[in-house]
Image 1 (tube, rainbow, N blue to C red):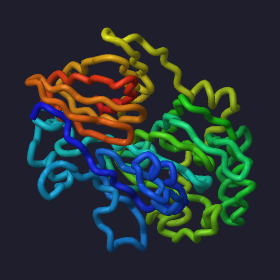
Image 2 (cartoon, rainbow, N blue to C red):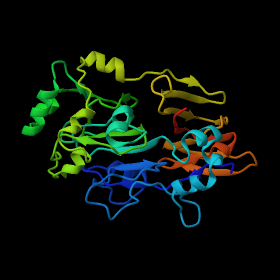
Image 3 (cartoon, one colour):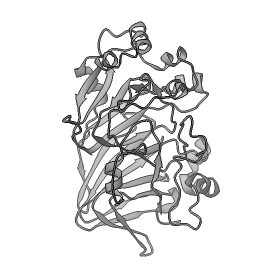
Image 4 (cartoon, one colour):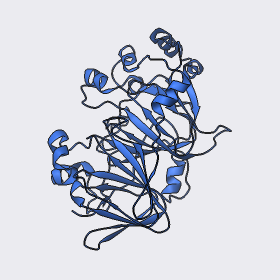
Length: 360
């Protein structure tokens, strides 16, 4: 295997509305917001949607160009270390240890939290929590409001106060407990497990995360009026134990920006363009993501690990060692096997790629 494998556009049902920009990206006619606002990339994870058990494969990625379009999960199990690398295979087996998403929020998401690893192991018997990182690709104005996020407890918030607001379903009060921060294209925000948050209406972003779908929701009705099932709120923990997933560590907005907004300066690529680290192993050991802006021809040297590529702007092609070419354009996504070797990238004008990786 010397070239990337193209993936399909796996969409997942969610409790909130969105996805119009994803439809536009993918050239789907009559683009509109629905309950499929997320595209899951290189996903070996099934969506946890109580009441939709008739869709057991929802969220799983498939290989778009192979006969029968097999699940990426099954293909990796067959390929073994050739797909993910010998070290990764020995440590994690067929799990990638990471999940990438495109998210287009047509409304504010409900206030939520994800468990950190220790809590996930204790409460869900999972080796993975759900620390995540957002990279803002753009957005849109909805009902006169610009894109923003809600992130972290303000000083003075206690567990008993938070629980009381939940029991009263005082959604305005819960939002007032969090920092409301405007976001813009290019912002990178790291959300560690245990930190409460909500993506605001109009945000269009890439999310890289640990590979689980454990989401604790404290709003029992979405902003558009969808009633959320109890099990979708507490994920089977019950309404008392779910509060164990929150870290009640109040911070000022300045501290929130300093801790969770990441900044790495871009560096030039040898043959034209730039490389910008978005999140790396110094920020979190769980995943890494960089942005490659190619204006000529660039190379991705092998490091014995798999990669995930998402084209977010422009078009061009990948170049194989025996002269193979594979076209790539905005919206397409690829899994790069560890055995791929050096991968060339040639842009037609400017090609912007997100290059994502799993844990070291």
